[in-house]
Length: 107
Image 1 (cartoon, rainbow, N blue to C red):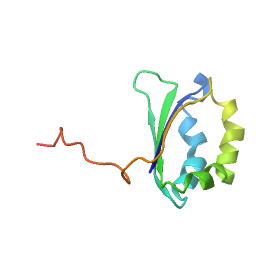
Image 2 (cartoon, rainbow, N blue to C red):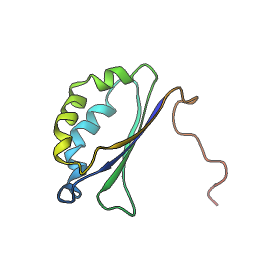
Image 3 (cartoon, helix red, strand yellow):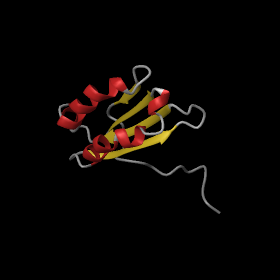
Image 4 (cartoon, rainbow, N blue to C red):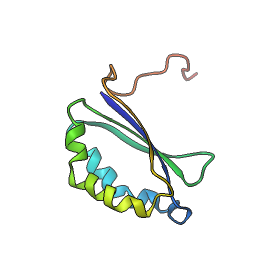
């Protein structure tokens, strides 16, 4: 599995509408063969920051970055971001999705 985390700091004027701005990209990516998950969260302390957590099967990354929707977000996003997104990309993660955290269980 390939695990990618991307921290997006957007311009204040786009902070509220950012989820709708990336909706088409998000939906298209989730439909890609080999996509395991593609999830956005808003930072709790930084109102203009979103974190994207995504995972793909090992052989799916090239198709993702060559897709039309990826090329479109690369063209559109510079208008919305306050700085270049920060990325962590880990390949060959030895699992195929979310695992259960053993230390915390519901009562």
